[in-house]
Length: 255
Image (tube, rainbow, N blue to C red; front, side, top):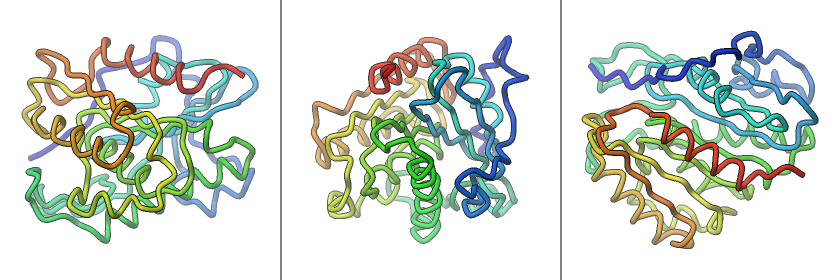
């Protein structure tokens, strides 16, 4: 059974700061994923947002803890929960999953309708943040494993220009539909940080490298950074989180 949640990072001081976002500003209830998302609020005037998507079988809580451990005071971090659906790869068991997974090789069949639907749901979160006063150029979208895959797909098919994209231990869904699928994208010049463990048994590092090469054919190649971590399996590590923090700080400087 594939379980690719990541709970390696627990904030030492941040638990009281995590809460489910039930605020009605901008009518969150019209965006189902946002009404239940775990949010780490800014501790001063909020001028930027990071949206981070968890992996298969996980929830937003583990990554909200991870974001708290690298937080910047002027950024709000939103970690939504995926809906619970039957997953073909795991014998049709019902679990949190952004879309159905049939296999994990680059040639496996894919849930095209589910991937596109999930991307629209993430775009709705971005649109609401923009409506609430944060320009899309001050929003980073990221994720781990299936969540990272959805982040890449969403950014490459979104007209909203983002500040950056973070993809950890992931791949590009529906890769054969690109570069055509990105024809209307506002993110062909958006920086992407892609990180991968060199010992990943779930999503081999070669798939990550192939994804990085594919990304370079879709967008400005100099904006694609691919980092690997020796000994790291299908999870994260302090060095990787440090790189994520550095990327966020660079793309979302204090204003």
